[in-house]
Image (cartoon, rainbow, N blue to C red):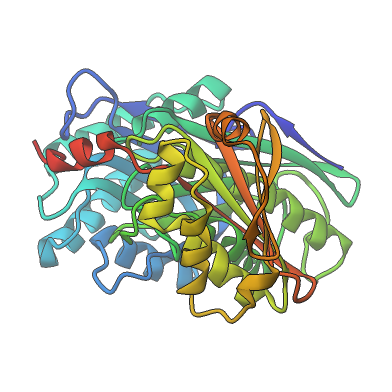
Length: 408
């Protein structure tokens, strides 16, 4: 049985966190976070598909593939350390070395992550001072984990964290996570940083496979604005302190671990989509009755990335033609004259089209349904049993305002 519990990255045994105000870009708020495990961890990671990769992404890719277990993650907000050349990579090494000295762990055991403005160099005196300060105030409390989740925010309007517990070979194991992401969010990873911790014992190979497979249905199924970032990173650390029998094969425990990991990642992904820059609503799209998963994914992603559809959601306008149009240019084959479309939210559910033709629905009822903070469009294409779900948000005036002066 899997159940949601309080907390985030410090919910699992042996994990601590800290945060500080290093003054990297923001004033009057914390802008650095540190995650630390009392014992070395198996590590897994997935990263941006953008050819332009930030220095921390390149650093973490090397560390995740390496043989040295991870034990700490240092995160800064405000400056992305992207497009910074050799100097940017040197700064990753200096950050890892600072954490190594402060925590008495190998520098290869330190992962780093940055988010913020592209092209600026990190103020390393402040970064190093922040690492030293955080190392001295690490705590395993839920409050410390929550503070860390707030410290990594940029244009986010709320912090994002979640934790669940799951039984593995008779032992209670916990998976917790935190993330940030609000803009430059697009399928195949986004301006998102996500850090997931677990006390489950699992082999490194299966840990990486579990993460790689799960992001296909979670982080890779969200979009805010169609921009894929240079810094997207998901890191998963497992320290084994739950005491369960190590998961080394795809048995019942592995399947339970996958379910719990999916709940954490899907929750964090939806939090990011629902906190899109300037948005007023989380927009969910479900494709049912597809011939294949690939077909369903293509259709769902096409709808959530349609600016016309996103604008209609903002206007609480049941402009179903925009959804059908977006499905039509997705590249996936289907018969538009067989599509059923529904809108649903906490205000109810309403069928908008049947077999490709509008029903005699009430515009007033449709507007009421579309006025809720979470709105779902369900399209049944009646071709098979496959399905897919994607998440996005509405497109508002504030999105342009936020991004017009992001650097100032």
